[in-house]
Image 1 (tube, helix red, strand yellow):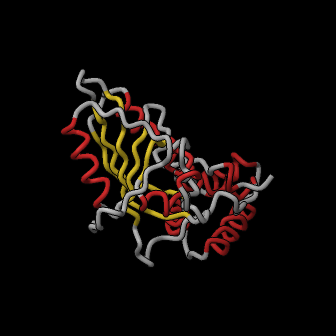
Image 2: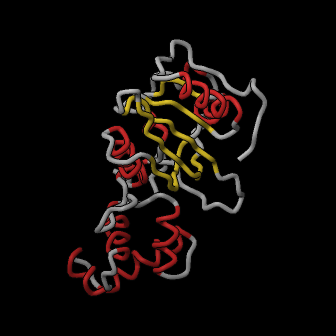
Length: 230
């Protein structure tokens, strides 16, 4: 985490500033202004109230492109449901904070990895009235390449084969379920290995997860429809 000067924050015009106390306001703005970490203040429906310059540069390029947007719109579909559930827990007062990995889409429609922290901010009455979100993007060039949701990678049959392999189903089980011969299943698996540029089934599944093809936290595994051709 890096520090910047006092001019590093940029507030979205019209943002609400009805903080509960001077102490919260002062501590919030000190952190908000001095950090290069992407920071945004959300309402309880996860709409962006204000954001610092780092967040605006990463996600919208200008304040007007993030103002009022739902934060979940910037999350990759593979993690959207899981992180929305975490934000809901914060908004409902079930948890004071959470931290974890995220996959997001930036202002150039590029997908990136990062660490996300959410903090439930309470008013003087003890009720949650804001959610502070911090995003620390992972800049390593060795990070896994994550596929944009606009790219259709798989045919419907390939998607069903991939789901079966990810669930641990054998060639015989897949053949029975999909009304294929064993040779037909092996042909489709070989095609998937070539498409994903891997050499075996475990690597195929591992790479699929790293690319955001499967929804995180769902069992049995399902290929997201965004990756399947009509």
